Amino acid sequence: MASAANPSLESTHFVCGYDCGLYIEIQRLDHKDTIMLEKPMEKGKRLPSDIPSVDELLKSPYGNKWLATYPRKTVLRSIREVLGQRRRDILNGLTPELSLDAISPEVEMVLRLHSTYKLKPLINATGVIIHTNLGRAILSEKAIENINILACSYSNLEYELKEGKRGKRYSHIKDILKEISGAEDALIVNNNAAAILLCLNTFAKDKEVIVSRGELVEIGGSFRIPEVMRSSGAILREIGTTNKTHLYDYENALSGNTALLLKVHQSNYAVTGFTEDVGLAELVRLAREYKIPLMFDLGSGCMIDLQRYGIYGEPTVQDIIKAGADIVTFSGDKLLGGPQAGIILGRERLIQKIQKNPLLRAVRIDKLTLAGLEATFMQYLDEEKAIKEIPTLRMLTQSIDVIKRRARKIYNSLKELSNQASIEILKDISYAGGGSLPEAKLLTYVVSIKPHGISVNELEKRLRQGEPPVVARIKANALLIDTRTVQDKEIKELINCIRTALNM
Ligand SMILES: *Cc1c(COP(=O)(O)O)cnc(C)c1O
Image (cartoon, rainbow, N blue to C red; front, side, top):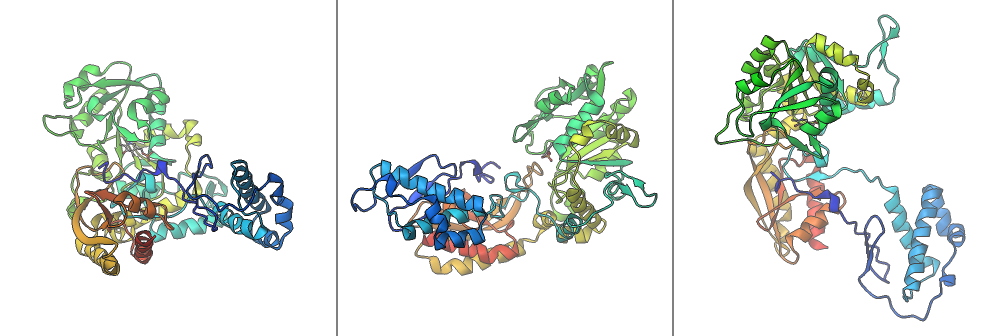
């Protein structure tokens, strides 16, 4: 799993690469360290006072052109950065070119850099479908369409059209969620972590929540069940051991101060071997007997029976509700394939109580997310269509022939590069990711690239820093392009990116 999803995005260095004939400079985005690769030509001494002023540049034809295109603030900042670098160079004993003609191309480069969005699309060639670092689910056309419509219009977000009075933002999606899931009631918040926090705070502040030690999971990005529990004010009552928890462990832990039984889906790992945990049916019986609500954090929240598509190991939300869980929480942007959200389903009486918690306001869902979610849920009414139209489900269930055809297309376009790299098509495994289906190995095809002149790490870096960036994985000294997660519309661009990276 870790090797499949290792884009190590934190350590990104930016190759500024402005080569104006004098020197090439590699800068980190924070401008902290600058490494000189080539010494400039000696052309007589320079003084800082020889550097043109900001005003000179602004008033030049170059400056006029920049001001017509970019915000004044960005122009000023870019000029100052380039002139500042000139000053440092001179103080370091270098002799940079100081004419406006020499300086202006650099300013333009920096201007362009400061004028592009920092958050940008990339090509996911890792094969990990729900990749938290890469933005999780891609939305369906219908969801995008509805977000667009709601974004540029007023709406009945909190307004009852029938009665002409104030309404609730949570009401719009309730009926469809009830219909799909079979739950009595539903509530949507910002994400699943917020959903869990809100539920624990509502039902178990200063009270005990019983959880099996085998389920005290860390999801990544510092989200750990024990820590969320502490933040919510609930008291964690751990029971059992890592590999075994019995029904009597739950029974023995029950006390007058028990507020909740919590079950957490072992989403991103599997405990195998000498193991035992208490099944949902038994827990439901226990919860009923002691009149304590049973909450199930499902994590991914799959609403389609994937077994029909040969994928095993993920219970459906519908099954969990039917089995009698009183509260179920899951993410909107994992297997569901919608926008980031936390979905809370369960007993009407309990959901009503959550709605009265003032914390709800702090974790409330926004209207664009709601628009995307409603459209996504509508698609679930027709399962056949949902599988085809919701990208997450499509990538998960797509036929191996489609994946292979995509790999072949890329391979055929790269064949001519046999001098630069050994390229072949291989069978491999891709993963669902996002803390779902940890054991499901999805057969896939990858384009394997072993570069000749450069290291595979260098190739990986060039692709990652390219335009658009391509994130791929490395295995056995080869760069693997897993075509499961590459969109058809991206193939041409991807081929160009690989070509550029190999020919740099
Ligand atoms: C992913 C996950 C969460 C957190 O959900 P977010 O939507 O990222 O807040 C919580 N619990 C489990 C079991 C998960 O898999």
